[in-house]
Image (cartoon, rainbow, N blue to C red; front, side, top):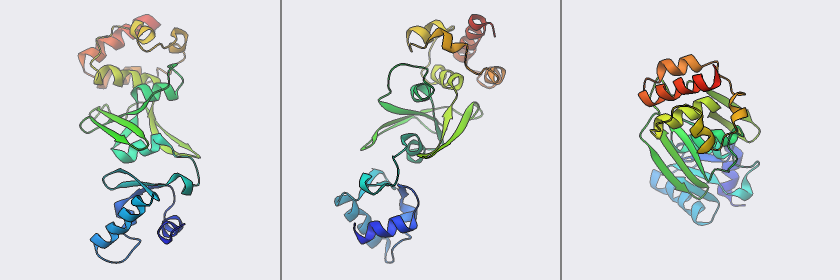
Length: 211
């Protein structure tokens, strides 16, 4: 283990690292300090994720990397939603090849050594309604509830859905599972998502499920 990695592990908790934090570990000019980072990347000790964001190499991590937590460092403010949230809640049978998130900024996609991370814009005040904070041994992240993930999906992908049929056919969600979701925020979703496609979908969902 190099001296650089020893310094990082002694002073920084976790495996996700930023320029701002790393630059404070060494003396010298910003150019010389950035040179230290570049050499660590070249040696495979650090993994470059995007500008200003890095990971400790896998062999130096104390715990598995949480991709949902990493997603929020890559581009934010954001939370896990869409297919990734549905997969997390065991609502869809397929595994998801990319981490899909909602954010308040313009839509983006990042292809990194840790996989693909995609972001779709959900503006305020709709952004964090129906989102929960999850804290686990592997990391802390925000994730949409199943209903929130679906409403985000209809909004961001401009789906002309009128009820549960597309959820079953297109996303392969089990109909019985739809009755198990939490609908406490249904009226709030209807209030803040003024988009006509979302309104029509929620109206059909309410009718189909007798909410």
